[in-house]
Length: 325
Image 1 (cartoon, rainbow, N blue to C red):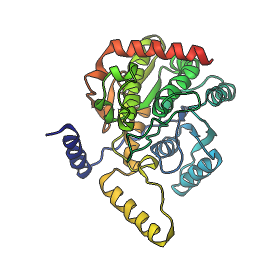
Image 2 (cartoon, helix red, strand yellow; image 1 turned 90 degrees about the vertical axis):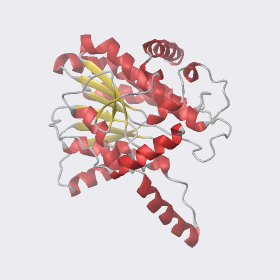
Image 3 (cartoon, rainbow, N blue to C red; image 1 turned 135 degrees about the horizontal axis):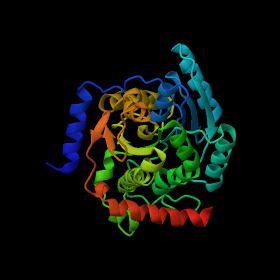
């Protein structure tokens, strides 16, 4: 059975099974950052749940953070929760935007950060994957820059307060939202971009890198600073990433509704997609350096388990960071 077909069958089977849910944890006194939390996203649902459990949550959005904050607060009020939540603009492809956000956070929160959820990400050209690679302003392939280099930069800027919180409170963590598509690529793709471009492979490569990032953070900082890190697959979820560009006109409106209804039949709702993220952000029994799926430890690809690749990628990413900061 072809690998992709087997994966699709497994997804549809799991879609019919009971959805695992994170157990409620008292998050009072915990400060959490969730990137990429605009409405209709996994990050939005994650932030809403953690805030309703008592955490102070800062969310980021690429556009219109004010609207994101208003929507979250309104949703929390409708459920009767008194969530402490605020939103800030962050463009992970922009060095100045990332540095500015980190500077603001360090000033406003005096080095207190217990959980960083690197959730923000993109998947471009889903239906036309062999188009010319889209590049960012600083010349990187857009999936690599947004899904990996941006989170690496942000995490490094916030490491001092994560380590401080880990020492003072005994528990800090970095949660990286990866994907099962990491198993479609190899570690060679992390360091060699000469292969024929395919947007799905570019996406998978960025998600493989996030697993290596989790392993390396955990290896370097868990014992001395009580800073744990994990990666996870949230499931195949109906979010902004999977929505087609809306069609206009009366017929277009009808087709939009039909497309949305059909998509919801084969993809998880965002509420369920957020559960593994929430569990990893909150459960006291988190095992660092692992890969999670459906609220439990899973086995990533063989490539993702190669420690030498994680160390090499960390060193390469640090070298890049020195050129931009």
